Length: 388
Image (cartoon, rainbow, N blue to C red; front, side):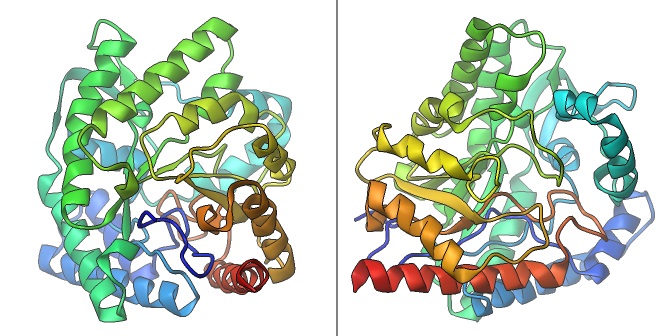
C-alpha cells in the first residue's frame, strides 16, 4: 500500500483553495495595492487563518488537509512573487474559456462584472516571460510549509495527511524570451522543481495544479496534431520538474474551469486521460461532479489504470451552492471503486473554492463546509458498503 491509498475507509480531501477570512483579505488588499503594512501583523494573521482553516477542515471531515492557499492572493501574483523573468502586462490579451464566452456573450458580460475580475482584491493581470526563468520563492514556500505543518500539528493531523499545491509549468505566463515552447517549459520545470522538492522534503504531499491541460483541446486555431504535441510538452515538463520525487508523494490535479456557467465548450475526459495517467503521480484528481462530465466514469471501464494509482474524482462541485446529498456522493464513489478498487478511490472536489482572493466567492463560505460534511457522510456510506 502507498501512503495515498485507502486501508480501511474512503479518505476525503479537496483541491486546495478555500474562501479566505475577511481579516486576511483586508490586509492582503492593502499589501497588494501598495499600502504599507506591518509584516509581523500580516504573518500573524496568515498563520492564525491557516490554523483556523485546518481545524475547520478536520471538523468537517476532511482527512487530507491544506492551507487553503491563503498566502496566494491570486494565480498570477503567485507567479510573479516566486519566479524571476516575468512582468505583468495589463495590455496583454487574456483569453478565458474563449469559445464559451463567444457562445454566451450576454451571460459572461454580466458574470465577469460580478465574479472573478469584478471581485478580486488583486487585479488579474497576465504575466509575460521576458528573461531567464529563475526561482526565488524559497522564503515564501518555507513560510507556507511552516504554517500548514504547525496548523496540522495543532489539529492532531500527521504530516502525510497534509498537502500543498504548486502550479504546473503550463500555467506560467506567455513566453516571449525562449526560442521554443519546449525550451520554455523545460526551463520552467527546472526552476519549479525547486518548490516541488521543498514541499516533499518537508514530509508533506505535493499537489501539482494543471488546469491548462484540458484547455488545449478547445483552443481555437490548433489542429489535432498541434493539440497532442502541446499536451505532450506539458506532461514532459511536469515529469521533468518531478524528477527524483517519489510518485506516492505527488498528487496531480486538472479541471475545466472555476466558474458557474453553461460549460458547453470543454474538453472531454477521454481527450486528456492518457496525458493525465502519464504524469509521475500517486493520485490524480479531476471533475466528476460537474453534470457535463459525471457520466465519464464509464471511461474507466476500458482505460487501464496503474494498480497503485489513486483516483480522486470530484464528488462535490465548486461551481454550485447546492449541497450534494450524501447518498449521491456515495453512489459516485462506489462507481469508481467498482472499476479501480476500494483502495484506489479518494473523495474530492471538482476544483478549488476560491482560486482568486475574493470577498464574494462562487460558493458561499458557509456552504463550502456543508459540502465537506456531506462528502464525509457520503464517504462513510460508501465505506460501509465496501468494507462491510
